[in-house]
Length: 333
Image (cartoon, rainbow, N blue to C red; front, side, top):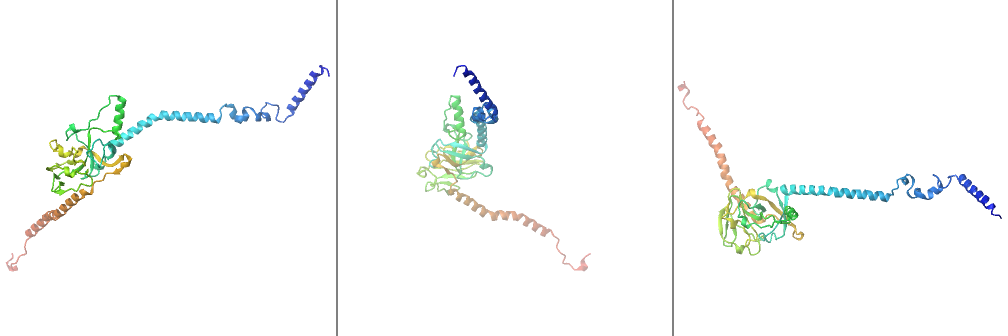
């Protein structure tokens, strides 16, 4: 075979291949709609029209995820501001947390306890004996006894301290927490033969909530009549509590004004192992019963006084009514 035959054979083969391509129903390789086109290239990977975008589903999902994350970080400061505003509204008018900084209410409350204070309860009822209340003593008590809180010099630290005080994780330095013993008009004194505190002459059996040995530490005071609009308060750890007994030389004679009451402490929320409610002890029920008995005894007198007026008026009408004549008819003109 000569070398001259090679070009013609090569050309013939090419013609044969081209013809086969043209005779293929799907068209030549690389043309749209060909079988080869569906077996390789971008169309085989992404399929159909998506091939023209050049993006895979993973890339699209990743972009959306990054967009959502960016949106979250942009909205986070707004969410924080809203949360702080709501917390401020709640703590101002509804419920506020307070930090216990001293031993004056042991063992009911320990140093480091956090309590929630209901600030709305006294909008619906009066203060009751036995309530554990938080109040501001600035208008009644010597401020030298206030817990001193060191103010941070760093603005950032000062901000965190303020936030902590609002949420009850740091002391405020101006609020007190004590138990109400006497209400306006009550007479409080100490002590009877068993060294107990008396309210309106009734001795209180306080051992259920007092710090052990507190009754033995009682010192004589009173009798003191609580002024109108004021309260007599004492701590449960009587030996260390600087309460109404120790402030008798101050404005109010040791009592605090009802207007200074922030609210009623009703539950310990921290630490979790000390979670409990703070109800008024049953010992004060006898005072309510005594008041109810006195009211019942006075009821007949009050009813008699009320009924006396109409009875008296009815009697006067009867006396003024003209009497029928007893003279014979022939004497009448």
